[in-house]
Length: 172
Image (cartoon, rainbow, N blue to C red; front, side, top):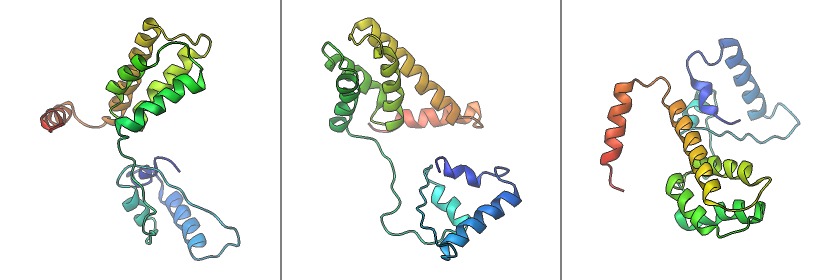
């Protein structure tokens, strides 16, 4: 289940649905079913706490993984694979890769956003041109902006400004 942290949002699940989720988890946790299963939850940092509220109390050591930034050394080959291996693009991909990595900051979500635009752009014509790169960058920037705008829903303009100023002051 992706976005599992939303299970804990007030008003997100009715009492009846929350009860059903807890019952389901308890039934499998207490081995009341002969069917095997694996639970995989994806979500923000508070997901583990949300799951605790649903009665999931024991997490094996090492079972919780946090996605972090991908370092530049690993990020570049990922983007290169999308451009060269996936679309067999003709031309020097190094300029494209350099420009895209300046905007993705190693975050998987941003890499995917820009690579999805690459997919659309190179699907029919696999030539790496400056015009195409500009389109990829503009569309990727737009997707990244929409992602952050959505993440800020419910946060006042004043608080967004304070958060932005605080982030600006952080050491690189």
